[in-house]
Amino acid sequence: MKAGVVVFPGSNCDRDMKIGLENSGFEVTMLWHKDASVPKLDLIVLPGGFSYGDYLRCGAISAHSIIIREVKKHADEGRLVLGVCNGFQILAEAKMLPGVLLSNKTLSFICKPQKLKVANTNSPFTQKYKADDKVMFPIAHHDGNYFADADTLKQIEDNGQVAFRYMQNPNGAANDIAGITNKKGNVLGMMPHPERAISKLLGGEDGKKFFDNLLK
Image (tube, helix red, strand yellow):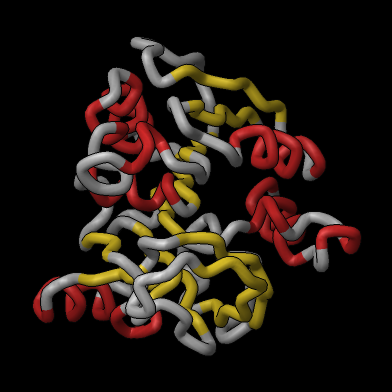
């Protein structure tokens, strides 16, 4: 599979993501936020970091980058989009996913391994898991507190859009939500970092399994 990783000013997980994808067999192209066109890809990834210094709101400026038009077109054609941490914030700001990411309930930056539960197995990102499988991915964010109004949360739950839930909620996220998909299931936003869990030297290999499963 061919994947593209978008680089914004302030991205800091783009190379980690490239390595994580390549270690699982993806052919990876690095994309620049000002690119007005992208090659034919199976997967586009918006990586973690602090794009544009998190000015205004996290991801708010990046959501209006030129390349986002191509990302939306890519998703509309049914191909895969993954946003991790800041990438999730960008997808929410671009209205490609419902809800918003607020400051953590502690009002502090949280960086630690986090145990998650697989909430559904109906998307290409989770179909190789079994229901309620447990995974461990690191988190590293100040604004990972997922919020949506009651009607939106009900729709998300009814549609099976919650992909991952925190087993011990670190940030106050509604319904323990760590990651959600769009209705079609081909766009996933998640706060935890699978690219930081691709080797025992990094503390675990659950992230590699995530990318391996996606490749399959």
